[in-house]
Length: 318
Image (tube, rainbow, N blue to C red; front, side, top):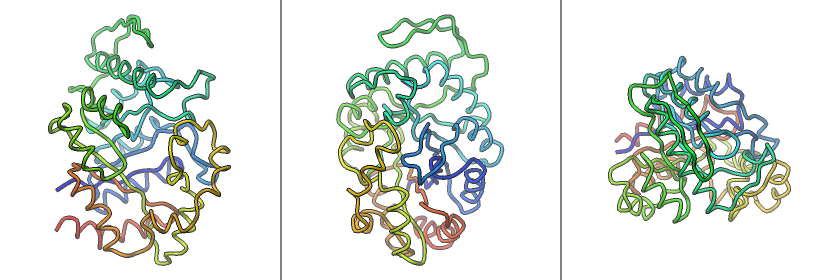
């Protein structure tokens, strides 16, 4: 039976709200936390995007749950040597309860310094080298590295956890999945894809943890929930590679009309039907996932946590 965690959406809530949600998640019986790592929200309606490493520091003192970024891009906006220091410090603060989730990123967050946004194949190459650099730094030994994409000279992390920070790799296509299988300490994906889990395990992932996440909108008025999702998170339903290549929130806003409320009603769990919430999360368990994270869209966070504490999580544990 998988663990069930809560997914903190830093694009939608300010730091104080995220910390309060983490406390409510722990009280409700969730077993772990994910937190997004963005420079921008997907659209202005979401309205937030705090620096994740500051929030993780606060979370480490507010709750006792494991914490993972879902996900950090360690390739363009921030050099992997700097992210290695951030991750190592987070692991020390959480007494080893931190995992670093990484992925190839989105132009939305990564192009802000004017660097080119490379094609997917190059981004995966950069990701693999970044993981290598960070793993070497997690040893606490001095590192010099002169690779194809990164240079590190005489770098040493003095504040490191007792065990190296586990690095889970997010993957959605076959090339990224192959990379996750080869270099990841775990695999992250956002669909209950049994075939992807099989390929990860057979490709070298073995028994390493597989984690997935989904978004829902709890509320007693299903139509209002649909409208909330359509206003805040329509980007989740945009097709193809747009999520990786569009450079700013306003570009996502220009595509809002491509997503209808009927599409939201069909694709996103909205409302207070216990069975619908339970079956959506069980789909990940049935596909072989070890950890499943759920995010509540919209302002009714207290109602969501009460609903999951009393109605949903007990069913999943049964």
